[in-house]
View 1: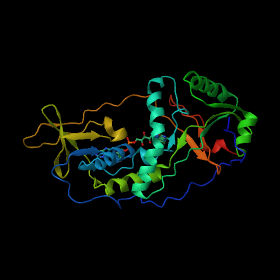
View 2: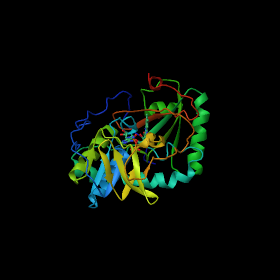
View 3: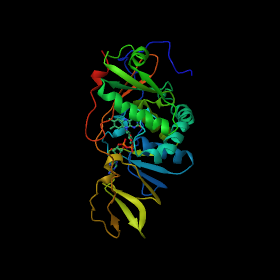
View 4: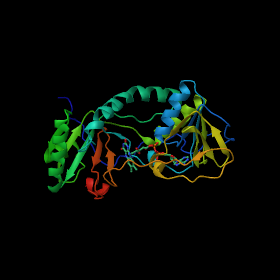
Length: 302
Ligand SMILES: Cc1cc2nc3c(=O)[nH]c(=O)nc-3n(C[C@H](O)[C@H](O)[C@H](O)COP(=O)(O)OP(=O)(O)OC[C@H]3O[C@@H](n4cnc5c(N)ncnc54)[C@H](O)[C@@H]3O)c2cc1C
């Protein structure tokens, strides 16, 4: 199997500088349109990706964002369908693997249309256990991956430290997922914004959607501080805010519905740390999935 590396890795390589603008450079800050084919709430990775694809298909798309930095700019950017398989996640695995497989084409089209390198890397992800206690948990994860038919590689302490010499001596095991990839969200988001603009999509920044316009039992537009923008298709992609019940501002002649969305409950708050070395393997450490925290980024390395 050709997954071992000759080149030693080291933790702490700075991320590549981001040339792309994170601010409003590509945003359209003019007045919102009265009507649009598609209104999208939220300009994170999800809203922008959908917007870009629909604008590319010839639809008039308007994205509204209230201006808070969403999760997309906090993420580590791991495309970790195998690494992040959790108990109960089998139902989503096929979708996650298929999604991961779409990235090369998605990346090529996005980079070509935006002119921004999104730092897509295919060198794999190494998950590390620090200390004996974590080895059992990592073994459990590896067994789960094997039962799901994923090809991942178990490394004992000496092997994981040989793969990444900057790990501290208490690094006691690892799983290497060669097929998991990584992207830099600080490049991805600006690239999506630029590609959307290139396709004629509108991005209305600092403009929150207050509520959905409901007509005949279905969404028919969005309401912002500028008023109503009618849209036969409304896509709610406002991430963690999707659970917030929006207020219902008074509006003449309209059945103004709140967003009435419920969050899909997950195990709890989590945390993860990721880094990468010069030869490119992404390092991943833990997810506290019951409110617990497995460790701090600093305890990965020497
Ligand atoms: C610390 C951290 C690390 C992560 N690491 C990874 C990882 O390695 N790999 C991975 O795949 N995923 C990771 N994730 C998850 C990933 O970041 C999210 O799943 C993804 O970014 C969600 O994108 P989104 O577009 O749905 O939401 P967001 O990026 O949160 O965007 C939502 C947008 O909606 C806007 N908004 C909210 N309410 C309104 C409103 N009423 N009107 C208008 N706009 C509104 C917000 O301002 C925001 O810009 C991580 C998340 C975190 C927090």
